Image 1 (cartoon, helix red, strand yellow):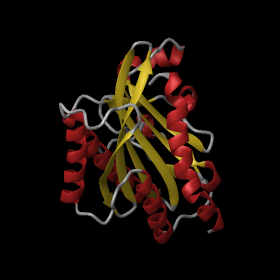
Image 2 (cartoon, one colour):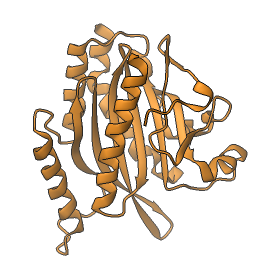
Image 3 (cartoon, one colour):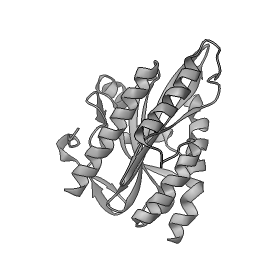
Length: 241
């Protein structure tokens, strides 16, 4: 992800945080390497990697991914492909086509999030992604496919000069996920990046989890939907045992 693309991503996340920040203030089963516990909001979490090809950088090096995180959030865990770990650690990595992060909103880090409040938060986030959480899984999938076909149509109905919202990937108790495709330009080249954003309620804390991968057609979106749901299930299962 090019550094020049950060303001767009930051603005989008800030808009989401602002949508519910005041309200909060007023109110794969694979463990991480060495069973590391990730600390946030006075709690300890188990946060497995979202896929087999990604590894967590560790407490000494995950700070290098903070450049991707808006000021309103705090980085809890950062995952990169195994093949670039050494380059990330020594500062020579220029780009990579897949990565993931878990973040917590600073203004709500130590606030308990009830089931009712979590529902209000996810409703606010869903509006940012053009999603209807009450829709069935089939309806959500059909809506996503329509948007993907519009992107890939010969008529060019949608041009990726701005993020294209794909709606909801899934919605369940204590977890939901949304998708979007974002263009990132570097020199004469434009890369379309697919983002999966998860909103999680874990141990009464609000967590955001993001997965980014190069968009290479509808198969990429299907991979993202399955990956985010499996990751959410694993996180909830490991932290509720």
